[in-house]
Length: 339
Image (cartoon, rainbow, N blue to C red; front, side, top):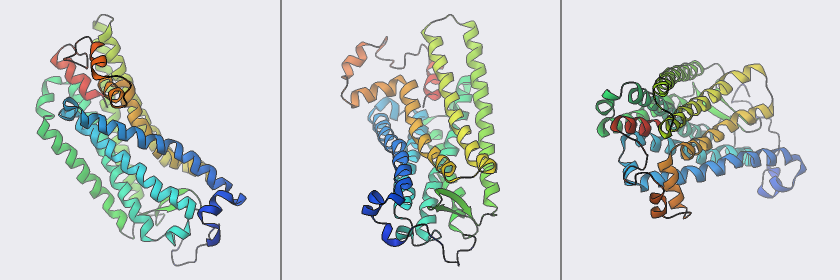
């Protein structure tokens, strides 16, 4: 596939690319297996992100809290990625050239342009969230000034604008992102495009900022714990520290996987694993929020009808302060560090 003017040698003829053939032909058993495995995190991620989105927007306190603007933005990005993973990548595996015509067709790279917009928006938002946590925990006296409602909205819309700008070159013939459905892998085309270096540079920069910010967050939490008595406050801060560590770990792991593993080994199943990390990441974000944010967890419990709001409130130490924080500075720390 080194030249889009050449005829592509596809794995299956058109008559074997129907729904009935997909489910019945023995030759397509691997496709059925990979689609089934992909659907596990995709379906869970779609349901979990929808529940998270409704829970946050349905709670007046959360939707009016500036730090939750970034969580909403990340959730929207995850939903876009999950949706296009179905109509783009999974549809490509099932129908292949019957769906695209050619791997180089506009239907292929335009859909990837949309997912790239969501991806770069997520990267920028995660970086801003890291800075949000850094300021709130290390320099809480500046938090209200830097992350007011107005400035947080500006940050949120700016990350979306930057994400679209970063993705714009993908519409140009110089650096399109293509889903090679026969090999279960996505790649920039041409294979020597400058955009590969740009992608790597942006991810390295974002990862460095996130790691530095999270390192200071962990240092500050450890410092506070060394001076505080054991109790619920310490346990809350441990959860915050673990949450930000997991968020950082998921992103860094995926970044490493996408950029370095292909240079170590190449196989179709390894390509599938790399592709699946997108879906797994979209599923992990709401899971982390459910596990470490009591306010979101309680709202989801009410939303799903497991408990009533009065039953939830009766179990809180202070119903007027559902996060359980003890003062203004600690409250800002807990709210901004949750996701």
